[in-house]
Length: 154
Image (cartoon, rainbow, N blue to C red; front, side, top):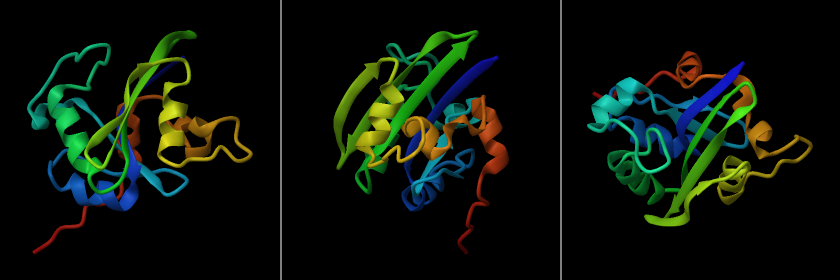
C-alpha cells in the first residue's frame, strides 16, 4: 500500500487566512493546533506552476513564494512523502518570518524534523508524524474530504 502527501503545514488560523489566495486551496485541521493545505493538481495549476522542483515533486518556485508569504504570519512547512511497498522517501522545508529555517531536506525523518520546528511534541505518539495525525489519509487528494468550509466575506 502506498502513501503520498504534498502539503503546506502551519497553524490553522494562518492557513485559513491564506487559503483565500486561491480557490482550490482548502484547510484541513490536524492535531496540535496545526492544519494542512493539500497541494493538489488543481491548486498547483491555479498557483501557476507545475512539474518538479529540485528533489521535490510539487515544491515549485510559486509554492515556495507562497510558503514564504505564509511564514510571515507563523512558521510554515512544505512536506512531501511518497512511499509504495516500503520504498520511497520524504522531504521538507521550513520557513519562519519570511526566511528559510530548514533548507530542503530529504531524509527518513524530514517531516518529523519539520514538525518539531513548528513546535510539535510527539507526546505519547510514536513520532511527530503520528502526533499530528498525518497517517489519517494515504493520498494527498483524500485530505480534501476533511477540509473545513471556506469562510466567504461579503
